Amino acid sequence: MKRYLKYIDSEIFRNWFEEDHTRFDISDMVNLILKGRADIREKLFDLKALRENCDENSEEIRAYISEEIDEYIRNYERAIELMSNPAHDTVFMHESGYYNGDSFDGTDRCYASPFKTFESVLEYISEAVREDELDDDCLSWNVVTRYDVKDGQYEVTAEYVIGHNGVVWFAFTEDKLYFNGLNLPTPFQCGDIVTIDVRPFHPLTHGVVIWKTNLAGNREDCCSPGVLYKTEDGISVRALKHLFNFRGIFSPLNRVEIFNGALPEDESILGKVSEYIKTHDNGAEAIEILDMKYSEKKFAEELEKLIGSETPIYF
Image (cartoon, rainbow, N blue to C red; front, side, top):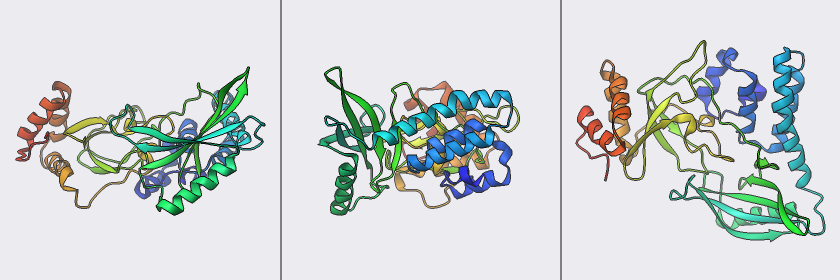
C-alpha cells in the first residue's frame, strides 16, 4: 500500500489508512495516483504496477482495469511522448496560471509565450522561479499547451499543468478524459476543524465538519464530510471532497489535517461553531438543519443567533 499512500501528504490521514487497508478499492488507488502531486512519469509507473498486480483478480476487476486504468495509462504515455519529438511546426504555448477568486473555478491564466520545445519551456520556468523566488505554495503555476498543425490549422494535442519545481502534475491528451475527485472515507468527526489546502490553486483555508454520512460498510458518501468555511464576504457549507476540485487541481483530501492551532481572526467563527457542536447534544444536526432551511445569508444570521456570536458573519 505504500506505493499508493505516498500520494497522501496528510500524516494523520495516511496513518489512518495504514491501520486498515480494507478502506481502499481499486478506483480509490487509481484516483489517489491521478490526483497526486507527483510527476506524471511516476504516476504512469504506479498505474502500470497497479494494473499488473490486479490482473489475477476477479473478472469484474479485470474489466474495470481494461476500461479505466488502460485509458489513463494511454493518456500518460501519449502525453509523455508529446513532451518530446516536436514536428517542424509544433508550438508549445506557456501560460502563467494564477488564483483568481472572481473566476468560475477560482483560477485564470495570463502571459502566453510560444516555445519550440518542451525543454525550453522548463528552462523558462526555472529561470522565472530563480528571478521571482517562486515555490509551489505560491498561488501560481504553469500551463503548457502543445499545438500541432492538422488540416492546415493548429489544434491542441496535449495540455500540461506544471509546478514551479518543474514537476508535471497533470496532463491531458483528450478532451473527454476526466479525472475523478477522491472519494475516500475520512477519520474526521463533527466539530473537527480541518485544513483545506489545495495550493497553489486556492489559498489555504480551514473548515469545521458539520455533517458526516456513512454508507454501507466502511464507505462514505461522496458529499461527506460537509464543512462550514469562510468565504470572502461570509460563510458557506459544502462537501469537503468537492471544494475547489476542478480538472487539473488537487483534491482537498491530499493534505487535509485536523487543525488545533490558533485560527486567523477572519476565521474565528469556525472555532465558535466547533465549540458549539462539541458542547451541545445534537449541535451538528441543529446547524445542518439551518443550512438546509435557509439561503446563505439568512443561514449566517440564524447561525449567529444559535451559537451566540457577537461578530457578524457577513460584512
